[in-house]
Length: 321
Image 1 (spheres, helix red, strand yellow):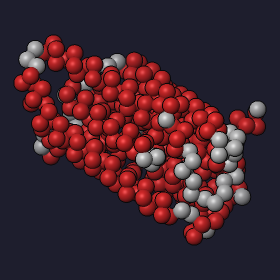
Image 2 (image 1 turned 90 degrees about the vertical axis):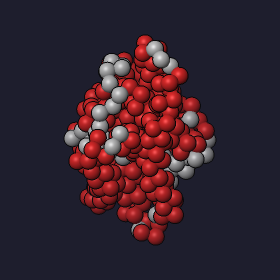
Image 3 (image 1 turned 180 degrees about the vertical axis):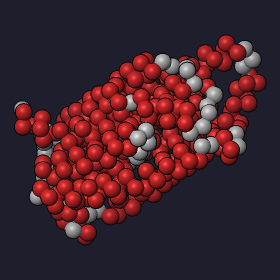
Image 4 (image 1 turned 60 degrees about the horizontal axis):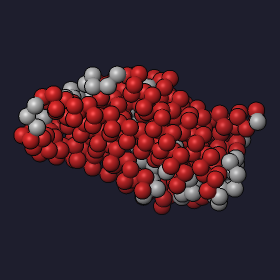
């Protein structure tokens, strides 16, 4: 049992980092507009993240494979290397792309063990397309909602108290939905390599994938509970100022986009979805309403993190294998 726990340490560390980094994606806008208390938000994230991992997260495990084979040692190296990159960016308050960072680690170990020709580049190309499309779609969705749905809602609902009730209820509901989709979509990158290595049993059996998803979901929940505050502030306040309706739209755009790609069995970035949505809200009010410096630093993090993760994995593998 102790040996199994030590073997899983890289994956659990990675899940912890993902939970901490992505906590702001679901409730950052709600906390930033003072619609939901931080303590309430963080517990809702933890609970619904585990629920999403259990109900849908296991479905992505069979397709999370880039190398021909994955040993336990390789699984530890690629997950631990990715976790270090994620934790570093979380410490700086940058909402990194945890999925891309994790895939970078898996690709790094695939290249190290099988060479450039042994990695599944066709699958990576398809996933890259999804990663590029995701923030654009969520941003366009939120832009259109703010421009057209917002005025319609204000005309239909005149009483301010009713509007505030709709906003707060919607922020909680969509925040829980977003937490669910985080667990469903991102849990595979935490324990996926260990699943492929057979740590949870025969990879062809559903119960092995479900067990892997539960373990990964719990580690993500702990990360959100223990380390989610800093990135939550970046999402909620630093990119652009948000009113309650704009915050509601951003979380809705994020959650729908995440669930769509979950149905396609493609792990995507929760950070890309929410940052695209929040930027779309800002651009709907004018380009001067968006903090371009913060946005550019986030974009740089998205581009660099998978490359750094792959290089770190190759370096660690070269040293230990």
